[in-house]
Amino acid sequence: MTYDITKMTHAQFSIWLVPIVDRPLFESRERLVSLLTENADRETLETEFQEFYEGYCGLAFELEEPEAHLLSILKVSETFVPLQKRVAAVEAVRKTSPAGRIARRMSDRPLITDPQPEIKVSALSDDEFRVLMETLTNWELFAARERVAKLQKAAPSVAMTEQLKSAFLEFFVCYLELEQFLEDYYYDPDEGLELRPEVAERLERSVAEVEAGTAELIPLEEVAKELGVKLKCTR
Image (cartoon, rainbow, N blue to C red; front, side, top):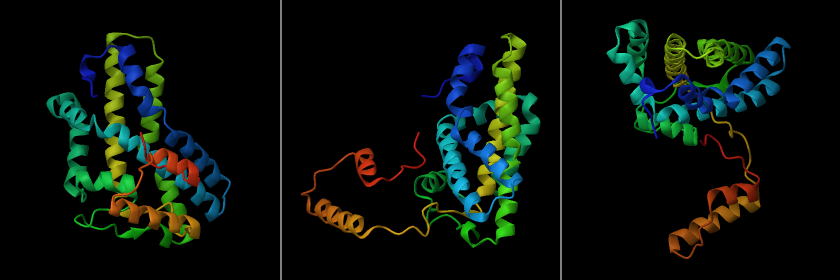
């Protein structure tokens, strides 16, 4: 459920923010920064980038529902003219549809009706991959998040609450800019992983049973646990 953040008190808004600003993405970013500082090898960076990307997907899902509401707030206030211009810049170059963006978070693959990403992350050279990691970890989103976290802890007042909400809206716009940047990249965390023969056989058998109407459906979470698969990009 999306609430009207303009009517929230400082305490209400701070609580509403928790699942958005306290996410694994931000912890992963700190680890990635450390690895870059240590000049870690490509394999190590890729392992952490998988966590970073899945954290980004989680943030995207949290912001998916309130996005229209947040955009409406930005559009009606002259206070946010600079942010309005940044949103307009994103929308002017955005290539993917809303459904396409959701599909990429769910399956790591764009819709065939959307323009296809031009850059395959796995095909980047080591130097190019490192530049991408540095670009992502230095994104303004992370500094904006720190400002939000600091204001959350400030003594409540009308002025401080407005500052917190303004800081969060800037954070939100930084997220939109990051989302637009990433749409040029194709990244599949599972690329190159082999499916065990017994798992492949079971999947084929399950598909056949479903098509025949004889399958006993099992919750996705139970299947993932049994197969040792980590579900990605869930709320």
